[in-house]
Image 1: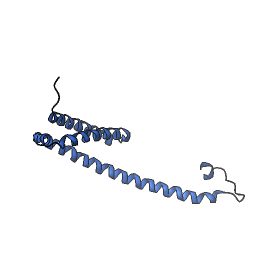
Image 2: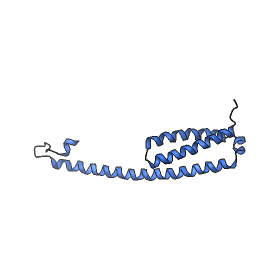
Image 3: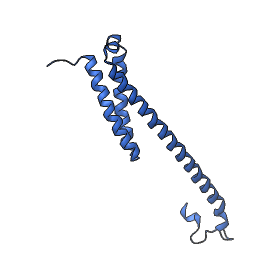
Image 4: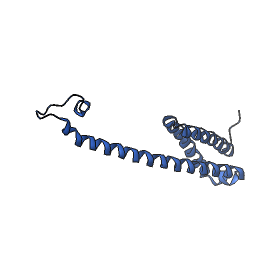
Length: 129
């Protein structure tokens, strides 16, 4: 059994990142947030391992140029995904603020639905919390 050389390990890890990047794109398109988080955790572990290997000058300077091209493509695609996620987060934040504002308006209206004895009228907001 032969041991894998560090350069071979880098190549294998880049390939694994390419596969995970494809999975992320599918999960993002399908809004599969739980699966996306798991995939991103797996990718983060690979990036950590790659970073450790790349700190070795012998490994870094011994890599074929296509590895850097592939790594750059992964980084570029990741930037696009991050921008999409940021946009969705902003949209979601705006929707949550609108919901909160609506809830606040409902809370101010709730007292108007009580009768003069302080009891809730049937079907009032009080019964719903």
